[in-house]
Image (cartoon, rainbow, N blue to C red; front, side, top):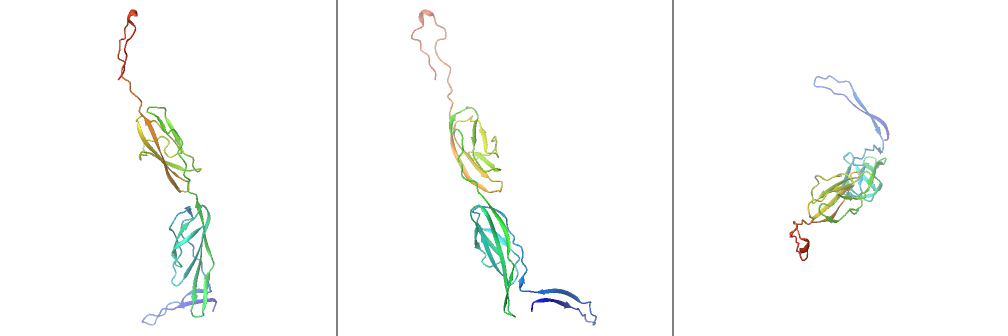
Length: 232
């Protein structure tokens, strides 16, 4: 029956000596104690296979409800996985169930809810800047528009070193070598959500190198016509 009770134990050794009685109070109820839900409360939109769990109690059945996503694993166990949807508020709710076979009654916990924030993933934005220029031109600026508080990982032909402005949404490049170069950048939001890799090709045309001019450098006024000058 429901109500308060207690369990008492007295230890008697082989000599017939008894210990003091030890007791524990017991609350007989059909309302189970709600255990907390463990798992990340900040996720990125469309994150998949995110784990959540609660204390595993033998014989309990776990009824999960997910808002803003979908439970994809774990069924009615104490451990589940969730695929999250688009950015916005979300939650994971748990009700634990058990059954009293003696009295034929169900035991239920109060709902336990974990609020979750689904953070947006940065959109794909084009790199802005001069995509064809001459070798040794003035320093070129390349930028991307992103979310407030984001950081940016830039690379040139896969190399992230020695880039002026690395970590910000704008870099400066002095093109002293001719050729085709791939500039790539990935935005990371302040919530730790990575955006897609964005890249573009920059064509650096070689600056011509002119040889010295060949031809007469001293002329008589009477002989100034038809002189040839050339370079290689």
